[in-house]
Amino acid sequence: MNRREFLGTTAATALAASGLGGSALAQAKVVLKATDVHPLGYPTVEAVVRMGKRLEAATNGRLSIQMFPSMQLGGEKEMIEQAQVGALQIARISLGPMGPLVPELNAFNLPFVFRDPAHMTKVVTGPIGDEMLKKLSDHPTANLIGLCWMNGGTRNVYNSKKPIRSAEDLKGLKIRMMGNPIFVDTMNAMGGNGVAMGFDQLVNALQTGVVDGAENNEPSYVSGQHFRYAKYYSMTEHLIIPEILVFSKRTWSTLSKEDQDLIMKESKAAQTEQWALWAEMEKKSIEDMKANGVEIVKLDTAAMADAVKKSVYEKHAKPLLPFIERIQAVK
Ligand code: BDP
Image 1 (cartoon, rainbow, N blue to C red):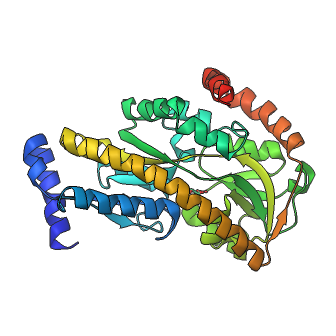
Image 2 (image 1 turned 180 degrees about the vertical axis):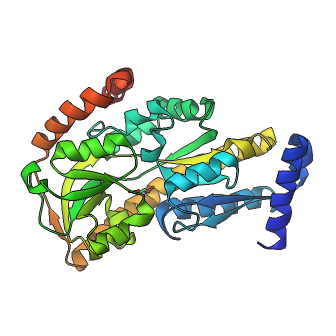
Image 3 (image 1 turned 90 degrees about the vertical axis):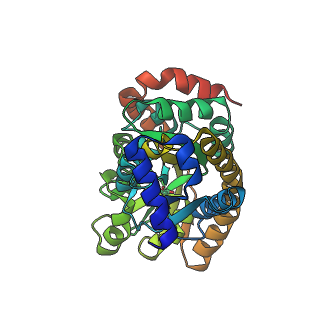
């Protein structure tokens, strides 16, 4: 930690502890610690780094962001916990692991709930997306503020054994899923054996054969080096999960209204920027996959979608039906 960060953190901590907050803190330098599972240059990371530069410029260096990329502060579960207690301020995470915390958010975590990425984009950047951010921010125990959404593309199954063209092909394969019961049930309904595991453990688990495969968007598959151990990438398109940028409520309450508004404004700009960066990264990742001998398998997903909707929606979607109807009504 350099001197400025030390001062920033100390000031924030001391003022928060003394209950002064607000105007006194408006004078102090505040370094916001941010983290992401992905490396520098990845669209989500880049968008937050650029947001930090804009915050610095707008406040003459009083507010800044220090980025800890590449899981330096642990997996997403750890990131959420640290944001909740104020040990870090900004976490960019998948909405997946947020579902167990704020159940309404699971409306966006359901398999096949969005028709395609354009539908997801329209929903999360519109009134339903705003409402979900507010639900998170207003939640009494989540202790997080929802800042904005980011694009996490479409998730497809990959494995080391064989091309997947049907539920039959997935039989007996252990497929890593994110930590949310909806996802394990989704994989089981698709025909495989879902195994919940943190992203921070995945590359090792693929390498050692603890799991046969996983599922993710193309950029994560490439940038996470998963393509080295699991060469069959099948276009199951079962989940289109938005990503979310969250802020520690504990720190938020120590910031002035002006700083809160500025951070909100810049995070909305980060959202727009990330969407553009994502489109480029997706294209590039598909090229990288082809160049590295990945077999991209096209399949008819209708039967899988039916089976998954039947069992997963039956078990998890009942309280979410009003949201699902509204999501589907977005054309
Ligand atoms: C990636 C998300 C990241 C998740 C990861 C995962 O960007 O937030 O941690 O998937 O599968 O697509 O855990």
